[in-house]
Image (tube, rainbow, N blue to C red; front, side):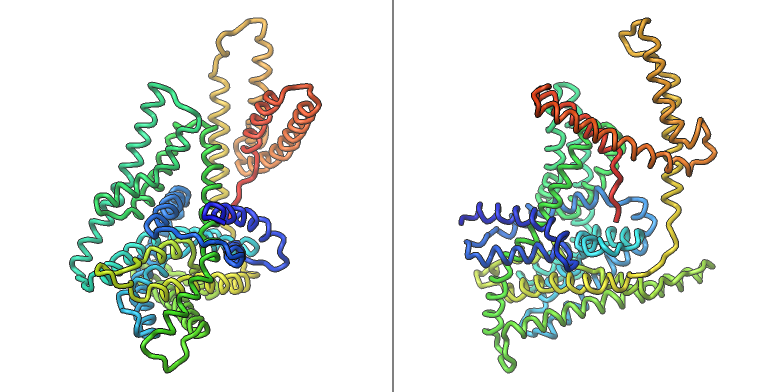
Length: 552
């Protein structure tokens, strides 16, 4: 089967993984199932997929990082910014140094620069994998927000460190002062590129739509192209395309608050991006499984040709070193989290504030939640195939194997350890979000009632239809008063949630009945399929508003 056929098989495997993870008797994280399906594809003897590392990097990383920046809760990001920065910046540097020397000590023939590059690409974590693991034993919301914020920023910091380490391996030289100055330029110019490209493309799209109109799919396609545009512009000027993609996503979240996009565009865009995210993350793990047999074979061959063969260097030698590196990463993360929390408590006491030390189980859960995933895989595959002189890049096959093995091991360890550590852990409920939601519902309902009272009849208006308009306005007014918890009673905003749940229940039942009748009429030829599609789509859009939101 050709490469196109293998890619199609991978997409089918991604779809199948979504069902398998629900029917398997053993609770397995989705990424592990996808890796297993990739191994199954490889075992069929098809021609393996071969992607240019640079193309692979551009294809997968910008949209995933853009979406992370777009959807991460900004309130939680700024509320826990100190903890997130300690994990995303301090822990990354601590991991690069600590794991780099550990890898070089375990495998001396692996050059120090390559060891640092491997440690740098192992530093970023993957919240998608953690979320899939914690689906049956949910991670506390605040901890999940911290892990998401850490992943958003450590992707960028880890990949920038990886870039410097690879450059040192290629050139054989490294200057800390030059690296610091280059880092400032790479970071600041990358962030600026992402912000400016997002604002420019958004402004251009609105201008063209205002003057010439647009096709319904045009803004969605432009949104899909945005992370690639930001990435390529930043790379063209020598800045960080990774930070540009993240900055573009964060900027897009604020642009979205302007409310200029149509409701139907937002619904379609969210569906498209959900599909893109599921497909890209899934294909990356399936691709890891598909490449895994060849990765193991190449690594065993490279290890067997090493200079020191006092110890047999077979698959078990490789697996043992991968386990040692994985354990070292967990210990480094545990040490950093514990020490940084102790220092934060000491600083709080010096300032006269009460420092609170989280429970030991939460600290352990934070350490186990350092799961590696898509970013690590995408980054390690971009290691150059050869040095500038044409010689093979030292230790490439070994580094690719170790990174791939650490991804699998971290998934297994987290899938076994996290549910056990978090099981039965009782935390005080987070009432802030509930109160905030109640306040928002009350304000929105009051604004809607005011708009109904001040809105005049539509144009054209026929006097004989006045009673119809009055009845319609009263019906809508009654719905909003019901959401407020009674006939205009706004003193109990907590009742708004009860009213909303009751309304959701009955509206969903009514909408399902409407859809069933329309589809039956279309099947019986009482209405055309075109009419049925149009009316069912209207029902679907209304139903989307009443569907409960998914939370971690």
